[in-house]
Amino acid sequence: MTIYDFMFYLFAAVTLLSGFFVVSTKNIIYSAFSLLFTFMGVAGLYVLLGADFIAIVQVMVYVGGILILMLFGVMLTNKITNVQIRTGTLQIIPAIIGVGLFAGILTNILLNTEWKASNIEIPLKTTIFDLGRYLITDYVLIFEVLGILLLVALIGAATIARKDSY
Amino acid sequence: MLQVGLNHYLFVSAILFSLGIFGIVTRRNAVMVLMGLELVLNSANINFVAFAKFGNFGMSGQIIALFVIILAAAEAAIALAIVLNIYKTFSTVNVDEIDKLKE
Image 1: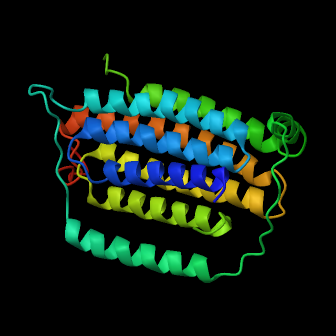
Image 2: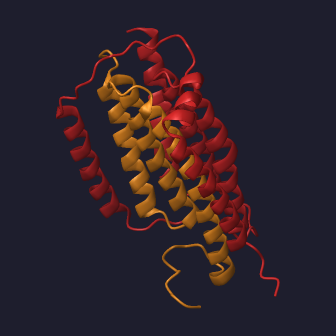
Image 3: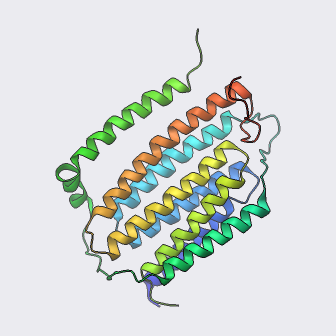
């Protein structure tokens, strides 16, 4: 077992255990910080797949942006009169049965399909240059549309969450 | 253990997807439903990047993964703005208590 396999199992274990902890704990703050570990595990998996720029973007955007946003959301939507913020769950047993069945079927399908996959060696260079070139030449329309979409999302979110001042 | 191949990454992605769906279905707080949704998006992203390495698609999988991250950020911002508005109207964010269409 090479070091690559060992690192993959380590990151996969971190990701799946934190993911399980996200959806099964009653404390919202524990759930948010387990989500942080899940994002870090996924970033590690991206590095093992040779996508170094995507891993850095994942850490910056997800951990530094979305997680902080969710912590703000938790803090602003709970009456913090007592110290512990607990939450309830709905219908655990049917959900476990349903999701377990779904996971079993999905895993069965993906393990029995003959993917036309070849193991490409990861070249020892960064992917930034290729990604940047593709964004400007082949995917420039999507790039510009996403810029407009981010502007619309920014204006929309600020307008929705504004205090009514009239 | 076996040599790590495409199936290992797909298995991780499938289990993360199922955990995300479990989080969306079971959780009562609206922000925790959004956390489950982020797990689902991350699992799809792992699939894209895994096929970008193991298939013959070049860099397309990584570019799509970049776009998914961007869209997830925009969607999380708008969803949390809506959750804040719901909290202002109903003074709760439990998804089973928000059942009136007009306040």
